[in-house]
Length: 110
Image 1 (spheres, rainbow, N blue to C red):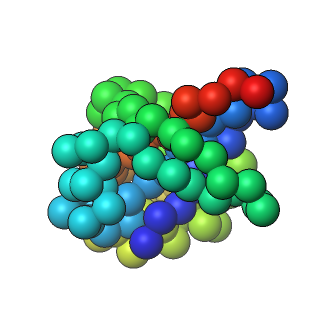
Image 2: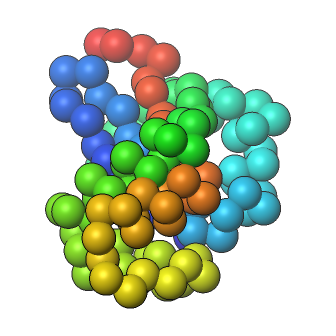
């Protein structure tokens, strides 16, 4: 399972995803070994390079995601085995620090 956590501006696009099955997911391990890939966004194929945010960045990403999508953030956390009791920023930061994230950046900047 892959959940899009952030999609940045259309001028310099990037897509950040969370690995719902953790670092053991085959697609995640494959990107760690070879960070170039092709993704499809809408009807467009894009050549991308995968970058791997630090755990600190992961905490920030998950906190921001939880503000925008509180119900989905709680469900995603639960699905991944993390207990979220009060839904605070500190809780989501803790969860995000343990989730493997991948940021895809296009190799072409047309």
